[in-house]
Length: 207
Ligand SMILES: Nc1nc2c(ncn2[C@@H]2O[C@H](COP(=O)(O)OP(=O)(O)OP(=O)(O)O)[C@@H](O)[C@H]2O)c(=O)[nH]1
Ligand SMILES: [Mg+2]
Image (cartoon, rainbow, N blue to C red; front, side):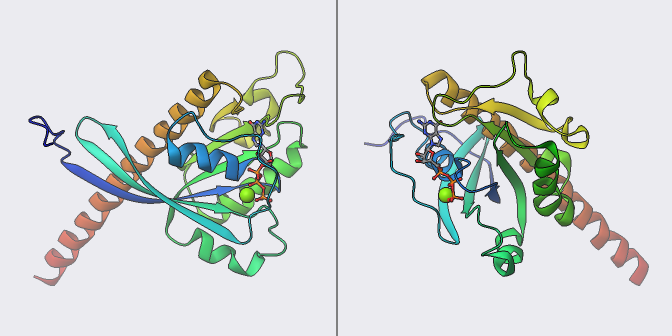
């Protein structure tokens, strides 16, 4: 049956977003939640290391007039095994979700940031950090915040302490993801505006 009031989406963005972080960090579990966009994802699944990369495609509404076709690249945390494939994973990526263990050393967090953000010259607003607690039992120092857990140069990034254990916790992950997508849409707008002004300048230069 056709709805009389189909939402009038005027703007459709497309974006490649890469999920990166160590083995067993929870990337694939998070990817499943984001792609399904519902609460019924099976969590108690046995761990299966991702081989290479798994690509999930889905659409998300950003606001009442724009939507985004998301291509989510759920990469293997075994970066030593796939080091030669990394440029392919990152090519044309406009957003990165770093899934890190909040208990890992700050220097290790920093290395993930270098490899997936700095080396590809992404801006802070193109990054979301999930300090992922994963299964129950993980404990953090009392009063820990993303700011206190992250190394200094990552302290200004959008970051949350995440788990998929409750509806509320999953909602927080979804909200943070949607904030990332809106930031990515802004970046795509800026890139297009730059491209347009470059074309205008080159036309004026050629006149
Ligand atoms: N209970 C529970 N289990 C989780 C949560 N997040 C991840 N897991 C489980 O932790 C294990 C590892 O998670 P994965 O998502 O497979 O880890 P990954 O980062 O994709 O690992 P690689 O593919 O090897 O890089 C899996 O068994 C998940 O089901 C969570 O919030 N709660
Ligand atoms: Mg995986």
